[in-house]
Amino acid sequence: MKLALIFSLNVERTFCLCYIINNYELGVDDLFATMTLPLQNKRLFIFERNLVYLEKSIESNAGPFVKWAGGKSRLVKTILNKVSLHLNLKEIEHYVEPFVGGGAMFFYLANHYRFQSMTIMDINLDLINTYRAIKENPLLLIRHMETLQNTYNNLPTLKEKESFYYEIRERYNQYSNKEALYEWTDHCRAAQFIFLNKSGFNGLYRVNKSGGFNVPFGKKVKINIFDEKNILRVNEVLQRTNIVHGDFRRTLEFVRNNTFIYFDPPYRPITSSSSFTAYAKGGFNDEEQISLAQLCLQLYILGARFALSNSDPHNTDPTDMFFDDLYKGFHIYRIHASRQIAAESSSRNSVSEILVVG
Image (cartoon, one colour):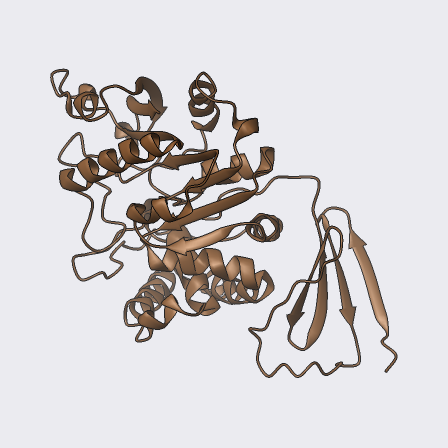
């Protein structure tokens, strides 16, 4: 069968689309099929019974697609400047990030270094589902996000937008097939995840003790929940990334020679109102912080190198030596940061954070 091709290039969009017309039958019965061909600088997706080529973008770098408490976008270079005093990242072959969150550190390193392997992990199953959705079929995810965004923006009153937000939140929390996410990817749920993150209050992701997302409405008149070009660039990076659901203890499974691990766990609260540890049911208490420190020591003994960020207790109590004692023997730095997520703008002041390098 002869295939008719249409090829178009849009410089501003930084990617190319090539559709095979005449509805060429590939034996695909749903919208979720996706594949990659070994073509230089291109990926091939099956989308709505069409073949779609996405040419690799070379003009911009991939970056975070969700807002995440404790995100490291403003601190990446400061952290890596300290890390570079103790190791050469150009000699690192394997990168692991067990608390990937929004992925600011991961994307920066992926954009600037060519590791033999990269592994990102998180205990938040819905976050991992979203990374997988972008990796497997970004076009399908974009279509679902466009539907949510357009529906919201086209509602005439803020009250109607609020009702729509809570309708999506209720649908998200009443999801009856979450166990299936261990085995397969739900693009519609991934779109809801991003929608709630971008239209909820202050970009928080917070769950209650039952695991239900409980962030209130963000009162935004108009939302822009995704950057299409960035989603496609993230897809490029994720093609060479292992995406794992699990807690930090699984890090040992991915350690090889010349491995560097960056830990960015939920921060130990320094005030009663600064706790943002409830990203997953169960939270992250001092016992978990101690277990993480023990893992870091074990990894170091095995020959892996690591860096770890956390809150600095000295911001409120100069006598609190929790992390100084916990990571005694490793290099401990205090770096200044501006809080990215806070209930009130007046509390977004500069504080110091702990950086441990081993």
